[in-house]
Structure formats: C-alpha cells, structure tokens
Amino acid sequence: MPIDRSSKFKDKLLRAMVLAEETLFDVEQEHARADYHQSELVSTSCENARTALTQAVRFYALDKPQRAEKHCCKAWFYLIFARKILEAEFTEHQLGENAFLDLIPTKQSIKREIKALMNELKQELNCIYDSLDPLQEPRQ
Amino acid sequence: MNFLGGDSNQDDRRLRKDLSKFLKEISVRLSERDEKNEGVYSPLCSMRRGKAQRAYEKALKALEQEDLEEAIVFAKRALLHLDMAALHATACPNLASTDADKEDSRLSETLDLKNPVRAEIRRLLQALIEFKLLVEYKNLIVSEELKDKLGLATQYLQDAIELIDTGSDGEIAAKTDAGLVWLSFVAAQVLEDQSHFPSSLIFQTDKKDKRNLGRLLEATRRAGTLINQATKARLAQYSTTGKYLDQAINALIDNDSIDFSKYIDMLGIETNMLQKMLEKHALEKHALEKHAKEKQEKLGKQTKQEQEDAQEETTKGEASNDAITEIVMKQTAAIEADQKKRRKRKTENSENTEDLEIDSPHRNRPVNDASLEKTSKVLRRLRRLALSHSHDQISTENVLNRFEEELAALEQANRNNDWHQAAAITDSIKDIRREMKALLRDSELI
Image (cartoon, rainbow over all chains, first blue to last red; front, top):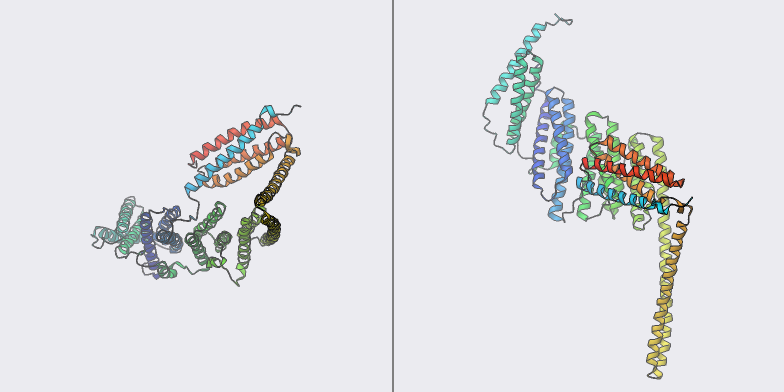
C-alpha cells in the first residue's frame, strides 16, 4: 500500500493545507496584536478553521483526498473571513474612531441584553403582583 | 488462499515490507537536524514534527501487537506530518507579503473555489465584510433589532461553510441565499444612501434556479428602505414586513415554491401599504405645516396692524407710549392665553382618552392587560436569546415553556375575573422566574 505521491492533485492539496495552516498562524498573531478590539468572531473563525484543518489532515492521511479537500476549503473560508474582519478593523483603528461593528452579538452584549430583559420582566411582574393586592379585590 | 485467489501470506509480507520502508524513512527524517527550522513558521514545523513523533510511536506499538494495518495508518500519518513540516520550513510569511486574492488564485484550482455554490459562499462573506466596512467608515448606527438580523446572516454563512462537507449543493445554496436576504434587509434599513448598497448584494441573474432569490432580494431591499423611512416617521410599528420576510426565507430554504410565492405576495402587499401610509403621512404633514404657516402669518399681520394703529396714537401724545405697551402686552397675553387654552384642551382630551381606557370592561380585572402583554413580549425576546446561548438548552426550554403556560393561565384567570386563581398563578410564576435566573446564572448569562 504505497503512498501515491505522484498524484498532482494530492500534492497541490498538501500545499493548500500547509498554506491554510500558515495563514491560520498569521491570522492568530495579527489578532493577538489587535489590542484595540478583540473580535469574538475572529476567535470563533480561527477555532473553526483549526477544526476543519485537523479533519483535512486526517482524511488526507486516510487516502481520502476528496474529503480532505472539502475540509481544507472550509478552513480556507473561515480564514478569509477572519482575515478580512481583521483588515477592516485595522482600517477603522487607523483611520476611524474605533467604532467597530460586531457581525454577531458579543458575549458582553448578550449578557447586557439578558440582564435588561430580566429587569424588565421583574418590573412587569411586580406590576402584576401589586395589582393583585387583596385590598383592591372587588367585593362579591 | 482466499476466495479471490490471493495469498494472505503474500499480502502480509508486502504489508510488512511497506511498513518497514516507511518506519525507516520516518526514523531517518525524525533524527535529521532540520537546519532550516529557524524560519517564520518554526512553531508550526515543531508542532508537525511532534505529531510525526507521536504517530511513529503509535505505529511501532501497533507493530508490536501485530496490528499491521493500524501500524501502516500511523506510519502514513507520521510521513504526512513530516511532509508538512518540511513545507513549513521553506515557506514565506503569507499575511504580510501577499494579498488574499493572490492566495485565492493559487488555491482556486485545488480547492475548486470557482464552483458556483462555493462562489455564493464567497459572495455572502464579501457582502458581510463590505457592509461592516461601510458601517464603520460612515459611523452608521445599527439598532439592536437589526444587529440580531445581521447575526442571522452571519450564522447562515457559518452554516453554509459547515455544509461543504456534509450537505448537498442545494442545501448550501439555501443557506447562502437566506444570509444574503437578511443582510440585504439590514443594509436597506441602515444605509441612507442606496447608492452605497454593497455590490455583492445587487443581484441580476437569468438563471432559473436563482430567480426566486432575485425577486426576494429586490422585495427585501424595497421593504427595508420603506421601513427605514417609516421608522423615522414613527410608523414602522404598524408594519409586519419582517414577519412575512422571515416566512418567505423559510419557504426559500425549504424549497417550497407555493409558500414562497404566497409570502412574497404578502410581503409586497405589506410594503405597498407601508408606502401608502408614508405618502399619506407626508401629505398630512405638509397640510399641517401649511396651515400652521398661514395661521402664523395671519396672527403676525393682525399684531402688526394693531401695533401700527397704536403707533399712530402715540404720535398724538406722550401718554400713548404706555398704551402701545399695554396693547402689545395684551396681545402677547392673548396669544399666550390662547396657547394655554389649547394645551389644556389637549391634556383634557388625552386624559379623557385614558379614562375611556380605564373605564373599559377590563377595569375590574385583577391584572392590567397591558402588563400581561408586555410580560409575554419580554418573555419571547428572552426565549430567543436564552435558548441560543444557554449551556442547558433542554432545561431552559422547559422553564420557558412552563413560564408561558402559567402566563396563559394568568390571562385566562384575568379574563374570568378570578382573583384567587390569578394570585395562585403569580406564586408559581415567582418560583419559575427564580429557576430561570439560576439557569441563566449557570450559563454565565447574568
């Protein structure tokens, strides 16, 4: 069962996986340097890219290049996305007012919203409890 | 001898031979001191060599246990890690020196990035970035509600990427389409100048399978633009376009052409109504402004005439100065009194309206209907957030379901004017709220 190293496609795929891994390394370093805004979406995209890349390597080693290619493609899309977000935020940091738009709600904003909703709920329920004061109950 | 006539001993010998060749090669390459391992990607090189070492050890272990196939699998993995390490050792940094498009062109052949479905993923990705750049560059404001929709569009991008491995082309296309539609809806509401609309969202196609998407994108853009205008005129609360859009997107994802046509028609009707409402609002506003202007002019003329008359009087004697002041004062007082009277009338009217509401048949109900309605609304928003971010979705859903059931029971008790039942239900609601708070705390959401 010799490894088919003559295959042109497999060779290109191997190089694509290596390039994806190097890009992931670069993007993570860039992200670590971007102290002006730590985008959660970039972290998630890098995490997803790493998972996809691990799968790509696994399928490649199992002589399943088609599946490896699909996982490598997944990793590549996540990396392009992460890198473009970083580029956009770098531009905003350099030329703008550091007003970043998060494409997904951040953990902090979700926490804030849930807290506000719980407070609103508490207020409304208090109104309900108050209106149920027995003193207000009409006599039968 | 097996059924196919092969000799199992011969296969075994061949496997052992291959394995021995691989193991020898791995051993030699692992023991080599990599002179080039000083480059930018030396951490990646070390990582891959470490993985190769571990795979090599596993291959040896499998060989010890006479599991030749397992040993071959690990040996091949070790060789792959070493190949990757070697490529990392000779690589140049990517991010700083080359741009994304250059890398894409290097990879597009291998990764089939020009495949139509993958091109659509790329389009959604590009559109999201274009929108982000625009909002940041122009300091535009995106409301919390629209941020939710934007989050949906981004989530659809992730769903589409994840489906590359397991989904069909149709499933991937449905996700990217949904993402494009939501993004289009958000962009139309946020961007004042429609000429800045992200180019990736402007869709023109003759492809039959993309006609529905084209229709929906166009309808969405129109609806979004009108909602933007309606929000400014404080009329947006009367629109249910968002609801129909949601249903049309679901029909598009499910490839249900009947429902899709139905909802897109309803979206069109709703958008037309919104447009008419806006036109009516603009006409009314114009008429009001005209009326106010005319009245102001009339009042101004009247005051001027009186002032002129008074001035004539003043020329007759010194004492008439006081008269002018008196007239002007009187005039001002009259205007103020008139305005006060109007304000009072307006307040009385609004109080009367409130009285009417209180005097409605709901007055004797134990709980105010508005409070119940508001609580339900808050609970719906909480459900959406809590379910998508809770660590324990099943328990959270159970608690939310119970909360909604109790609230429905409270509404029923309210309708029946059953004070005791209503009081008993509120006790239960208090307990459920505490439970929900604990669940949210466990998920670090509060």
